[in-house]
Image (cartoon, rainbow, N blue to C red; front, side):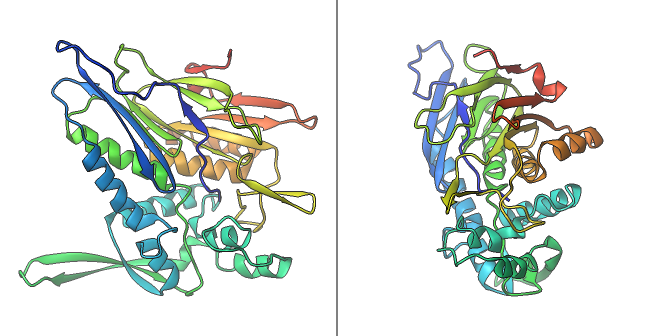
Length: 349
């Protein structure tokens, strides 16, 4: 499982446009959330500035899904046997279970104890060794969780549904870092659409959803970074012309550390308990739902190129397209693109 990176670059100028009275209004909203940033651009007639509503939604999601907030719901889940969870948590957990089954366990948010042990969680990592890895692997598996519901009446005598998450062992923990930012994008998209916004570009931590066109009537242009380490600027590998779709990128080349000459990637394989060591450097997934794009990008980084290509061939019904960047035995960077994404891609930069 991987912590998410802001690998995808936006090629849209995020400054508030100066419009004449006859022109549609363009809004560009920026802010901080989930330990990263968000950027939203939308335009149209008779629209308002929705930053206050957007910030409120993102704060609610943070208080539900952020492992870096001790008081969040997921932090309480990770500390307790049974925890009442909200609609945000329930939606992400439910979709995580579905994608976990589809990918035969390659996407697994319960890998959190291993993420922490390898030094990529919110707490200081313990001294890692084979014995500890083997022990923590016994905690991995979404089947070790259960959700149950209860009905009760509040003081106003109104029936209320409550949802609880149960764990078979208290040491089991969750980390939604491989899906939460994509989910946040979907929630914000629904909010804008409910406010009659027909043309928008939403980005949270590098995960993106686009609807309609930009203000000059063209597809939204999105850049994919080259997988290069230790660079301040982010040169582009390719661009994607996006419309009415979502993309999410996961990679292993930015968040890592070196110890005794060995490089440890933040992408942890839930099957072995160790950081992945294959040649896949980054993968960008395109599909309608950003939450799904986010989770499948994470899963493909665990699978590696060969298994991911086979998965896409065998699961065409999922509507996934992908762009892979990998290295050969000589260290040269190569790419593979699925046919549905290839027509939207420009690598001639």
